[in-house]
Image 1 (spheres, rainbow, N blue to C red):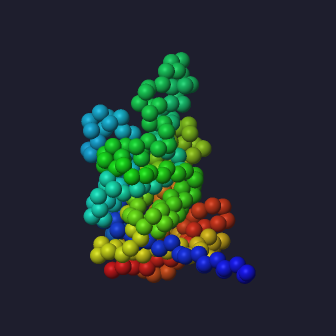
Image 2: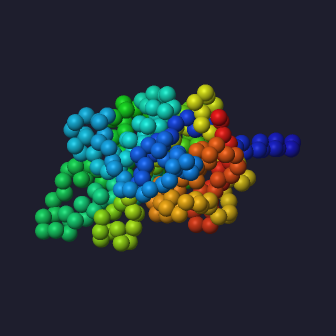
Image 3: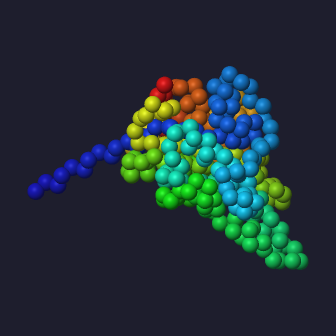
Length: 278
């Protein structure tokens, strides 16, 4: 008997229902969108991290920079999507986790008093931001936490798109980075904090902003990653791993169709087919 032919692999196609953005020079997706589409000039300024008011007071006092940036963008994206945060599975992705907290632990260990604050220890785990998100939103759905150094945004996007399609459910992706103080800044020179959140669904709705697809035959590409024309925005894209999302967000801001190539692994980029929904 001749074995049945394997069915061809299907594309991963999702729809963007909500976006959250926070970084140097912008505090919301609405502000960042105007800078990405060229309607407003980009002016780099130090990122201001809002207090995570959705957390209870005790947790709010313990929240570090990664918690502040990830909760801010996550809440913005979920609010824009009109979905319930508590019901959304999530993917959190960061190249370094809580860089400031890591610095403080190392400084304590290098001092004469080697005792570590319980709060510092609690915040040192890579899934700290995901845990605080669950507390703030009441989310009980699954949460995946990834790290792929400079490829962390693309790795998180691939995971979130796969979950949305395979499980046929909306998924929240949060990618974020914070900067190290010296002396670690000299070897890992991230210039500032940055966060992006995306609510991705397997089906289109009246809120959908864009359609993104990963084609099995072409999504892993040797082509060069897309750059931004604005020199300051391009420096931001290159300087912070989570900001590698900016060419993809630019396609949403401009409502264009085509292929956006994102930095991923060495010599292997992630090519995303994009199309507008409005």
